Image 1 (cartoon, rainbow, N blue to C red):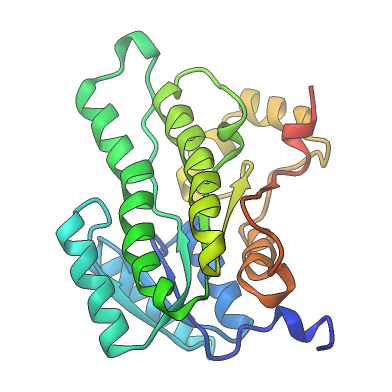
Image 2 (cartoon, rainbow, N blue to C red):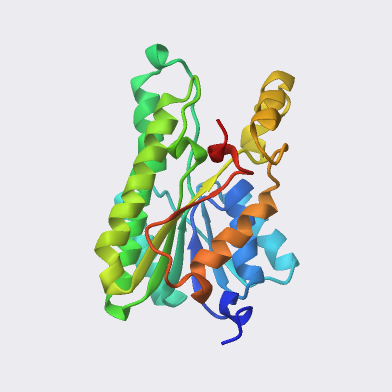
Length: 256
């Protein structure tokens, strides 16, 4: 196989959670541009429909399924429905996540629980449901979205850091259990990207100045720059990569 051909995903069905906007939408677009049939997911029906229409307007093969990744019964029903109606899920990207900010001593218990359900429990639940479908087929790719906060700490986001550190280790554990069954499990650790979720930070001159100065590439990331990593890990080009966290961060985690 030509090395460039090994990056193609023609005809493979991919599910990307939390993909109605931001990094998830960019990853979904990249997978579809590489030839995958992509299922978008989100909880906001209007935003999900808008994202689907946008990518379809670009000539991409996408569809959507709205379900709550924090609800186990909803996850199991949705995965069963996708497998029945659309075909075998060959690629899963666990991207759904939220952020809550407060000093550790002031962080509300309810916010902690919501963040852990969304950022960590969903990865386990969707990952397990899809893996159970992949195992009899003896193949599959699972990509969990981690963060530079899987490695670093920042003020005011202790629970987020804890959740992403846990996703990193969940990814490694999944790779160990599922690798012998033909399923590769890897993570992507995004740095700071220009998304609506980061709008307040982008507009904060003090923070943006600190970030640009700390990042060896001396800039924020653009969302489309994350797609290549996902395509690589989802494709035959990455078939011997397993249990790895690929940081796409402009060198932030390499800097001191």
